[in-house]
Image (cartoon, rainbow, N blue to C red; front, side):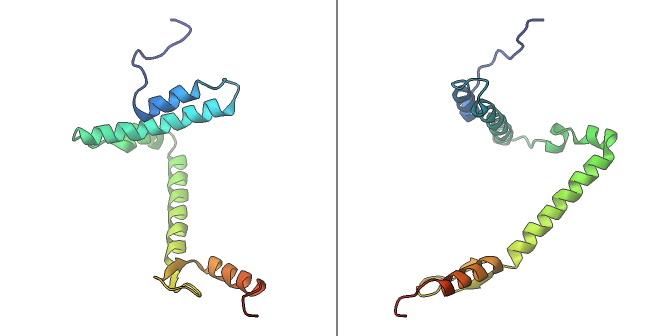
Amino acid sequence: MPAVVGTSTPPRGVSGMIRRAAFRYSESDWTHWLLLLGADRVDVVEGVVEDLSRGRIPNIPAEMGLGAAWRHDREGVLRKAAVAAAVGAVAFALWRTREVRAPRGRGGPPRRTSGWSRRRCRSSWNRTSRPGR
């Protein structure tokens, strides 16, 4: 087997452009490796889009190895699912607690703000010198 193993297909699409840009940097540079990691992620998205354009629906859990993980590391799969559910629930709760209010001193449509940013804006508004005072 040769020392370097690779595919005979040249890089293509956006991921290929990112890969070509990565090899402008030395292997000792973080930029090189971060660009290659990003290119891999972009390649996954390109593969899904290509499958959908051909009328195929990709089986993403099978491609991610979920079946093997369930057989060999059931506890880890359940832990990851619980963490994902918790993060999703917190994100949804934060999104739902935002309320609509009209902006101060300006016309226009109301904007959505979270409670934290509302308190922050109010406290910074009170600290700053306002015109006419």
